[in-house]
Image (tube, rainbow, N blue to C red; front, top):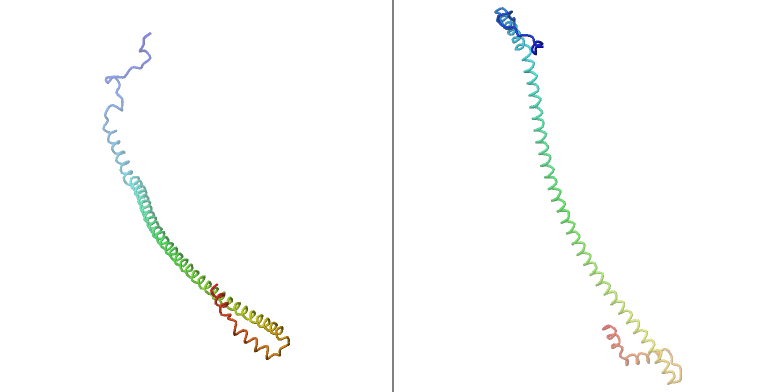
Length: 189
C-alpha cells in the first residue's frame, strides 16, 4: 500500500479554480458595499451607544472619585475637629484639676485655721475652768479654815460664840493666812 493514498490531493491552479481564491470584481464591490453599510450602521447606531455607555461609566467613576474625595475631606475635617475638641478637653480637665487642687489647698488651710481657733478656745476654756476650780478650792479652804478656827476658838474659850464674834474671828484668821501663794502656785501648774 501506498502511504499517501488516504490524503486527498490539493487542486492545482490549472484545474478548477476556487471562487475564494480567484478575484471577482462583482463580489468585491458587494463586499465593499456591505462593509460600508455595516460601517455606517455601526457609526450611526452602535458606536454612539457604546460611547454614551463609556461616557456614563466614566462620569460615574468621576462622580465616585469626587464623592470619595469629599468624604475623605469631611473625614479629615472631622478628625481635625475631634483632635481640637480632645485638646480642649485636656486643657479643661487640667484647669479643673488645678481648681480642685486650689480648692483642696484652701479647704486644708481653712481647716487648719479652724483647728487652731478651736485649740485656742479650748485652752482658754480650760484656763477658765482651772481658775474657777482654783477659786472654788480656795473658797472651800477658807470655809474649812473658818470652821476649824471656830472650833479651835470654842475649845480655847470653852464657850459658844455668837454669830458676830464668829465672823470677826474668822475674818481675823483669814487675814493672817496668806492664800495668795496657793492661787499663784495653782496658776503656774
